[in-house]
Amino acid sequence: MPKVKSAKQITFTYFSIVAFAIIATHFSLLRSTLEDLEHLNAQNRLNDTKQAAQELLANSHKNSLDIPPFSSVYVGEEAVPQDITLPENLEFNKALEIRQEKTDSTEYFIMKTRLTIRGQLQTVYIFYLDEIYEFSEEQMFGNQAKQLLISIILLLISFAVVSRISQRLTSPLSALAEMLKKRSPHDLSPIPLPRGVETKELLLLVDSVNQYQARLHDSIERERSFNRYASHELRTPLMVIKGAVSLLGQSNEPLFIEKQRRRLLSASNEMNDFVTTLLSLTRDEDLSNLVLRSLEKDEIENIVSTHSHLIANKPVSCEVTIKEAIQIKVPETTIKILIGNLIKNAFACTEQGLVSIYVSPDAIEVIDTGVGLDAKPRGIEGYGLGLVIANDICRKYGWQLDLANNSKGGCTAAITLQPHGTPSGQRGDN
Image (cartoon, rainbow, N blue to C red; front, side):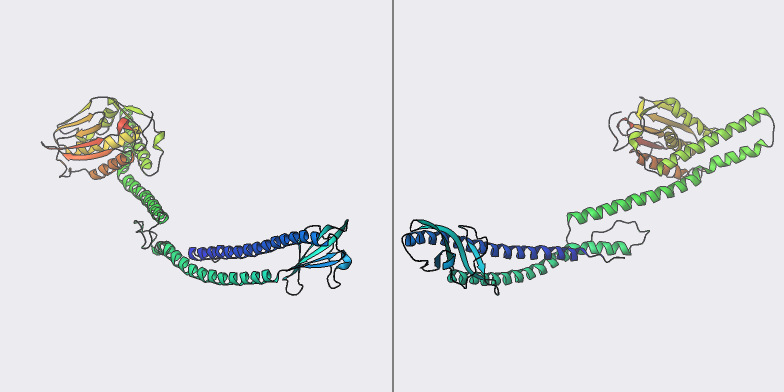
């Protein structure tokens, strides 16, 4: 595995590169500026010397002339001292710096020009060297070296400060990484915020990780719920199917066979509805794709008839009242399981009296005159699990399930609907 640098090391490296680049650029610019100033000064001095030489040599027979304090003028190439080698392709009226071969310092400046001497236009060579300026330039470079030393010292101090700041900023991330490394794969509890500087990015990261773990926890819980629900809800229809298959081998009468066929069909449909609903609870769905439909009285009465065998031998009646037709965005099979569980529990809990199903635009209520919430119905296994399934269905579609004891006995299971039956977060045009 390749070695990866920490955020602190990367920050320190980048800062070092930028800092050294700034110092090097500053030093180079100063040197370039000093050289440009020196060249500009020499050009102006040579131009000034040219004007003075024109006046002094206009009617003179001299071939050379010294113009204090720093310039010398030679008329013609032959007048130039033998120890001086003239550069080739020397341009007219442009100062050219001649450097010493060993020290690379300025030896002198030279300019080639033309002057009118004794009525004739002649080539003149002007030499210029200001030793005081050169000395001043060396002093300026010396001062710059001192400034560079101070800059390096400040840079080292900055390195220490940046290193400290970088450590404070990255230590919470390191602590978070170590925390995640030590956590058990099965530990999906929220991650606490590491100690240290609380930055916006750190808060967002911790919040995102916690949200991801929450979604993962919900997914695992949905799978566990499916196994728990399936083992309970599918047991009854499977027993019915098993019993019907066993009975089919005991008689060849058409009416008996037809009765068992209907039992098999009803049990298989019930299994299919349960599996469809339970699977929908264990996966994420785009609720915006649900179709808006009307909840009719016939649909609720069909659900009642499915569980009517629970009150067949009891003095219990059931009535369905729809105050106003409502529009919902929940599949028919899901409504069948949801309301069916509430009706089944109401029938199981009621020994005599009335079970009323009341539908309004805001709620669906199942009201019974049974034993209430504090007692468990006899002979009905897992009745509480049906309420858990109903509650999970309501939570998925943004509804609210509430249970309350009635003042005169029994209880009321009320499903509070979202406007237009639209699941939470999916309101909009129908």
